[in-house]
Image (cartoon, rainbow over all chains, first blue to last red; front, top):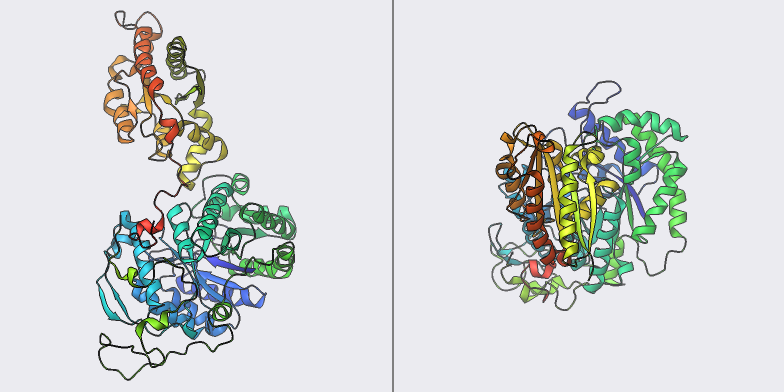
Length: 413
Length: 209
């Protein structure tokens, strides 16, 4: 099981000092936080994407690539990447670049975004959010699996003989998670492709998360990727810890009361009861987190939100220390108990390469000399004589959206 | 036959409240009429005053605390809704509108609704038809043609002496009972977590669905 943190990149006034960090300070602080996450033994750092103040993370792959250069084991992910308003072609290129420079430590989580005006800013219509997510991902998925793509759809200019470069590292695309709070179609999308499903979890009652995960698991089995128990599930969480519970509540309350999203709404006590927010001792965080398994089953990835609402860097680093020293080692041991052997871990580059190639050497894409035209017969790659053969993905199921049927124009209803 | 479920929502702010009183009278007449016809009825009443903090939290957070969730579930699965609000500053009370705003937009489809309103003088009675009725028609609910307005004077001798408040209550309750008796909407309640459009359908039948 993987443990890590995710950040939404908000730049928020510290309510206890009245001071708001500059963009430059907060960006540097986040880099420090990411590096420290690896130092304390966490597995994953995931970064949000926003296109308006007071957020800074407009270009996640730039930031994640830098962090990749400063770390050696940390898995780099997103929370979330906007599949609706970003061009799927650019996403295919950017995230495979990140995959290459990080040595296979990149995955990504797709979401539709929560800021309405982002759609018109990028020339899209929010009422088409779901069809955009469906069509864009179908294209992204093909660009990573087929060397040469002919494509046309509703929302972007058609492609004839397009090759997304570079090809995925070792011929294995980055693993994809789909995040959604309450859209059953997105749970089905994740299940359809055999991808992971991540439940935000933190702003919602457990009963909502439970139902979304149950639907995802059921559809994962329906689409033939394994049993429901083998589906790849991630959960958000939100914690604030001090050695003893009372100090945690006292120290966190001003940040809670003024936080973006839930500030000036429910009380800390109500919110802690109604959502997974846990403010208390490391032991309380351990107990609460172990309880998640009771309603979602054995799962693969736990990410916590630690650094928002104006919490200063020093405090966030203390939280990471507590997670690394006291919480995560216990969770690793406890979650491993009674975990059925056939429940997989979260996919990593190494596991995906092994699943695809077994003992064989993985693909190393080598282009032909530029003919200035890859519309003609054959492949632009030396190692793949025909365009189709490089796409031999072992996860392809009969009747799934690959092969000739997939070149049909997508009909979006 | 399972009992028909009528949910009563009252947005009166004071205790005791004439809005609640009107709501109770509308419910009592509707229940009497249905029982006379041999229809079993259950009534559940919610005072929005008790839910005011939860409604605000829902507006801010996007999810319902448990007590409010119970009210929202009751309304969306009901066979009929009796909705009564005071008229403030020419329209429904803000609390009433906030409650309507946190209801899933599909949750009231085909729901028979009996509208009631209270106010200081009968001069505000048209608020039912220019403000409250469009709210329910927008949500594809079915408000009955008679809306019942009770002015302060209606509770004593200063009200309408020709068409008295009890007459108007009965007329509205009868129209409402007619719809509640026939509706089968409780069998087709919208589940927000149900997968209406499997992905194969969304991407053009590629998965044969």
